[in-house]
Length: 84
Ligand SMILES: [Zn+2]
Image (cartoon, rainbow, N blue to C red; front, side, top):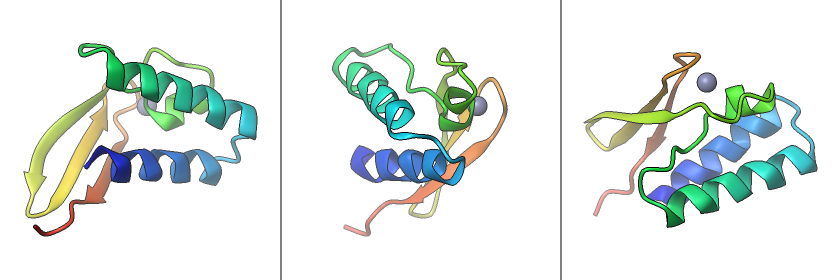
């Protein structure tokens, strides 16, 4: 569920004290990535410091926890997938 991942990334930006402009910009990149396969989903931590070309890569799921890792800063993000 990408919606959950998006919420997680926005929460991370807020935690990093990103302003509305940065969050809107991130959302723009997110939508673009959703609409064009092959376009990277940027890492919120890298995005926050102006590195907008980072790439989140999916890792194998652990139970119903989905994991993605940033190729640049190696930060890992996890979010729960709802149990079907
Ligand atoms: Zn990163």
